[in-house]
Image (cartoon, rainbow, N blue to C red):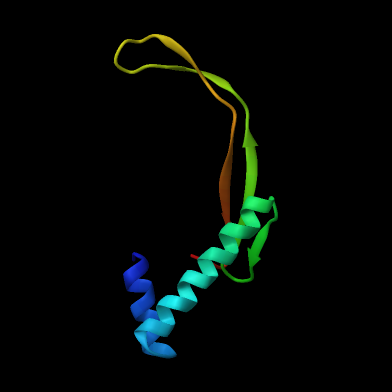
Length: 85
């Protein structure tokens, strides 16, 4: 399922396709904004999103085999709820 499929599914249940697209965009925007601030976002029955700091590490360039340093960065983690699947 992609974003367009999600918008269609929401529109079938609630409102017009345009209003559903606005609702989906607003939801994704709110989650993105919270994660940028470093907050955890929990959706009961679905799962939770959080931001974790990944440390710098050594890696290999697959073309040359040369050892490189991969920089530290922040990544988003998703933990599914127990009853999700």
